[in-house]
Length: 301
Image (cartoon, rainbow, N blue to C red; front, side, top):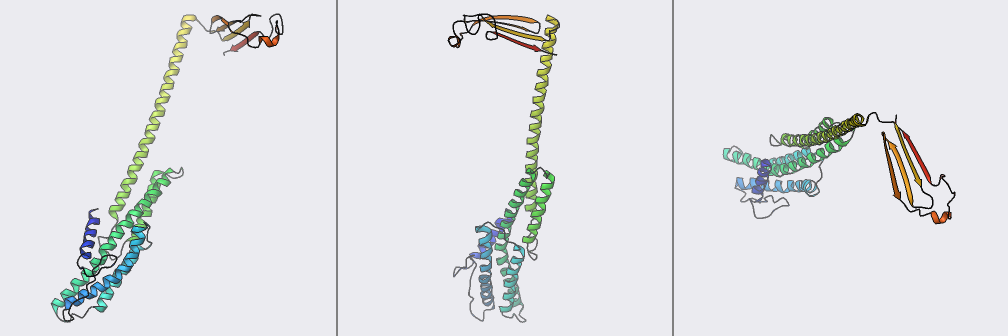
């Protein structure tokens, strides 16, 4: 971020050096002074070179900043813009001759020209690195969700893609300021944080499953203890479970009996028979039959 602000500040200072006329990038367009003034002539040549370079830089700005897209071969294009401007300056600048002060002025204007072009190109370079970093991060997230790719493999693929694309966007003659090591380190840190968060989520799920399994084992052990206590209190439980239900004819009384785990239970209830009027005064039969007798039998082995 500090480097980005430094480049932006340098760009603004270059843009504010002249108030006569300005290009789309706010680059100075000083037309020079007296023909005998060597420094003024150099300034006029520099302004002309900047004006021509600003058109090419405007196209890059529209693609990267306005559209948010990646410019393929950005590094080579930036080198071309800068080299063409320097060559044009060398061809059109007046000869300094043997005057050392004029030669010093020539070198100074040449450096100013390169810095004025390099500063906005570095702003675009940093912006493109941010876009490339986001693309690599999205690829890592997509690859880490697939079952056929591990977290480590997805991380290596995303890092390799970013390094390859960032190298293509870097100027060969840009110097040490044109580097992507910090952006690559930031990408790796973000991917490590995501991997750690995913690992913590998996650990929490595993711990929750283990707790549930422990709770089930505890309940099973408690149930076994209860069964053992029942055996001690009531003796060996019978494997037979029998249930009988009988409705007294022409009444609403229902008699139920059951035998389960060595204990018998008898229950008398009053349950109206809603279908009795449909069967006649005596129903289907006058005695005990399948219509008013129910029997169930369960055998536990």
